Image: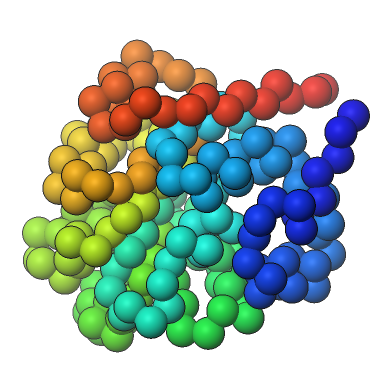
Length: 207
């Protein structure tokens, strides 16, 4: 069993510092495969439970640019809160990076204020992200990375149209990362339509 340490993965020292402080040393198999692909800027389909976009995503964000640069779409508010929290922990030593969870049921005015404040990463449910797009409170022109996490779950929850709308309004030149435990046809179609020559990273779960 080959073990990959995080410091072997060309990650920023400040990210390594945060991960080490959190007690992580070794990358999971999907992280070891996925992180180099994401850092290269390639589109990717990750099949397996643990998404591996957080660390390389942070590395690609420019803290000096106070504009939205990355969007992470997730099926539920719980996940949005959890992933945003995790990204903030990883970004502990990267000054100037702001991560904002956006989801329904939370005061939209508060979200709008935080977005105006120069948030670079939005982590949210498709419905609420769409809502912000309609209100023009999120500007897509600097977005270089979009992540669809638990894509099959978003499909099950009826977010297919929202996902497509969001993807179709993002800049042409961007990186699209998709994570899905299963690959239903509709998700495969989204991949085909919105990804360029994606690398597929599969992780077989050992029981």
